[in-house]
Length: 257
Image (cartoon, rainbow, N blue to C red):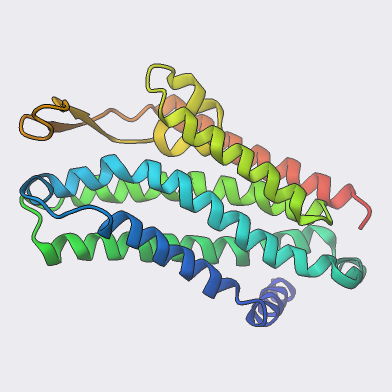
């Protein structure tokens, strides 16, 4: 355990010169500016704000959080490939420990930024005065259902960034998956598609649905309803995440670096 903590400290020291956390914060800032300030604050926004956030966030999450995972994983792991540093590191430490230490550090950066994003969004709602009580339980569940897909996506990107010396391969794979996940969110009539893609899980785990909206009346008669949690799918998500981690770690350990 002490050796693993030393590896984490080593990752933190190496990350200082790579501006990893700063890069993630910049992406978080762009996320918040896009989500909070691209539209006008109207009476409908004030009236429906708490639930409107929960309805709209899955799409924005699917755009920015996989991108953040790609950037953090690529910068954190790509530095090790330069000058065969990864080979030297694995000669001194067990490859499994190296995989886990870099994973924990990078994932902590992404999750921390995600929590900051949610904290700012909630604070913004109180500041501009969203009407109605704050649905704390619904927000807590949604935050969890945002962090879980993000963690699985980061594990996937982390593995690719460690296995492939050329980070373009990992980035290209992530971009294809992200666009496929975003595309699946625009096909609500085919829910199986978003469930099959880890990038589509933001929409598959969405807890709020919009009803009564149309182009003429817009939000005048619109209302939101909470949707039931699919327990079987949620179990499949955790199982898939564990499987991706196990397979990714196995591939890295067996690969020549």
